[in-house]
Image 1 (cartoon, one colour):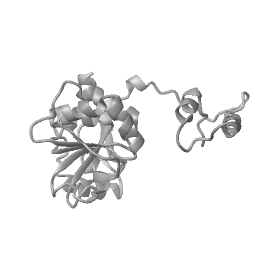
Image 2 (cartoon, rainbow, N blue to C red):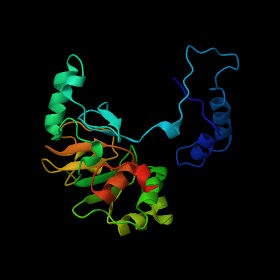
Image 3 (cartoon, rainbow, N blue to C red):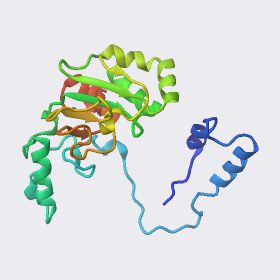
Image 4 (cartoon, helix red, strand yellow):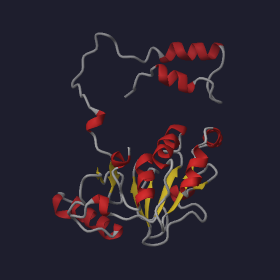
Amino acid sequence: GLIAPDEKTFAYVMGRPHAPKGAQWEAAMNWWKTLYSDDDAHWDKVVTIKGEDIAPVVTWGTSPEDVLPITGIVPAPESFKGGKVEAARRSLDYMGLAAGTPLTDIKIDTVFIGSCTNGRIEDLRAAAAILKGKKIADGVRAMVVPGSGLVRAQAEEEGLAEIFQQAGFEWRLAGCSMCLAMNPDQLAPGERCAATSNRNFEGRQGRGGRTHLMSPAMAAAAAVTGHLTDVREMM
């Protein structure tokens, strides 16, 4: 399906390096504004979600679908059905987790913020807001990899890079980095990472590495406490 663009979307795209210019911009705007639903459209179902009622989520297993609210506990394999029972058992074994463990009790070794998934300027602002005036926990390695060179430059102009560095993060060049264990940016076997990338498969961040996916703000909170943390407690 399509989500109708709004004025915020248009403002975000305007002036970008690959955005239409001049008359082409006006033509594009006219086309984009046709993507709205008809006034007399009928829907099979209308779903209303209150964002403030949704707890931050993290992954516990080795697939992006293995996700729970941070207020939850590691699930037991027996709570699943069919072939998912064995898949959950394998995930827990690989991740080194025991069923019933509160997610907030899971300690981390590394924090990776950025890459193409959560390396936009808005993402870096959200993480920096949590980190400002704080330091990462002892024994935690943390890095930020902006999603593009443009984002990196803007973050430096806004003072975000300085906030990350003062907190103890490495401020890296834009690229893929630890998202897929590129070059030396890898987890050692058994190391656990709070990551904002988009995949947590076995070995994704290094052979034997354990990945927990979460938002930039959640990753920043984990960097400060040294364990998976409900970022709402730090706001």
